[in-house]
Amino acid sequence: MGAFDIFKRIRYYSPMTQVVLVGLVCFLCPGMYNALNGMGGGGQVDRTTGNNANTALYSTFIVFGIAGGSIVNLCGVRWTIAISGLSYALYSGSYIYLNHTGNGSFTIAAGALLGIGAGIMWAAQGMIMVSYPREEEKGRYIAVFWIIFNLGGMLGGVLPFAINFHSDSNSLSDGVYIAFVILECLGAALGLALAPPSKVVRDDGTSVVMVKYTNAAKEAVEIVKLFLNPTMLALLPMCFTSNFFYSYQFGPVNASIFNIRTRGFNNIFYWGAQMAGAYALSFLLDNQNMTRRRRGLFAFGIVAVFFNVIWGGTLKQQLRYTHGPLPSGETTDYPGGLLDFMETKRASGPIILYMLYGLGDALYQNLAYWIIGSLTNDSQRLSRYSGFYKGIQSLGATVAWQLDAKNVTYLNQFIGNWVLLVISLFPMFYVVYNLKDHSEDPPLAVFEDDGKQSVASGTYSVEKTV
Image 1 (cartoon, rainbow, N blue to C red):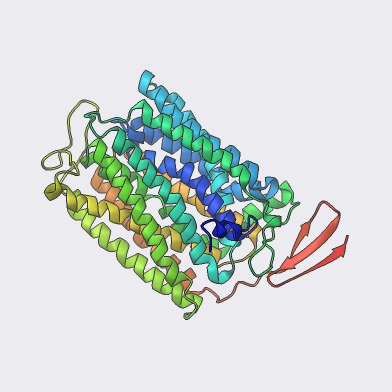
Image 2 (spheres, rainbow, N blue to C red):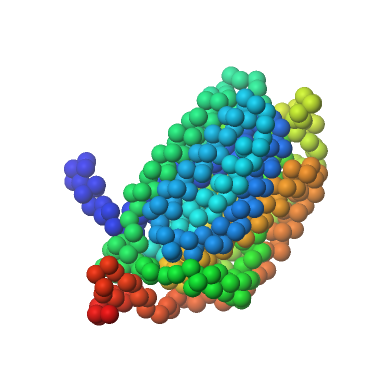
């Protein structure tokens, strides 16, 4: 086989190609945002503006996350993702203005706009990732996306690590923010390369189907139904908790006990561990030698035990300090001062623990997406379910970022994270225990431009004149 023969076998309209493309978009847009956010306070020594911007972001994300699935159903995936991608570039660029003026109002406003764009983008991404593959492939597709997406976080960790390697500053330079803006603009443009869902065909010849013509009234009703759906209500604690820990991990941990270059260094391994976790879990979630329920229960057990172990280790670490570097110039009260990755004896334990945070995040969120993808194969319903997940997730994140912005003690933030995790496990277990081996969905009608109605579902398709 020639070196380029593999490219001849790639089908543009295949589900995997589309998942890879949306993964690359998220690599360049949310991935860069994650890297910036992972620095704590957007890479600023004073985290107040970054925390308030994140609060504004997740406040609008709540609304547009929940409504995002319906917006995608009405407008399609290409332009919604492309336009949403530009909001990431605007947000990163706002920190250049903050660096030169000290005025955080633009950054906070950009955060609110990013919440709108992110809510819509993640609803579209979730629909593509969990509705395009066959049932027995969903774990692998989620893992492929998660690996590509978190490569962005790794690259975003390399940039500040390299650029600030010899810097004594506790804030990022303009050059880092400019690099983020360029990459995020490229990601927005790449969104236009996505194919319409109605043209995507699986390898077995079946179509990935999404109703082409819906209407705003129908979508409004379907959004209301989400809050009356017993399964979605049971998943509320899981959704609420799934990003709650970010503010604690990025602020009271990474930004509080590590110097600026080590924060970037940590993020390389944080997001790298996410890739490893997603890849490993996919083998269990797609194991056809076990029932879907059994796979889910094993994965649930791994997540429950792992998270409780790392929070136990975090408790021991948190009891050693109460604050990080302050705008007044006072440094952290962590024993020995800020950690540098070159101080292997002091820093190795906290760095490994921080890396395990990333692994735990991947396990939790990949399981969450797999559970949602196991509820149905209907792409429109999955776009709404994904939007619901991201919207409620953003509600939790809004609360979490405000806790840090209001200077709630680090120990109390930590306790809140652990308690919420434990609470989320009980209804999560209930949903997993009641999963069926196969999702049965009625045929979906797709209205094409030629006036004909195609009815497609699973393994058959017929056509009739309207």
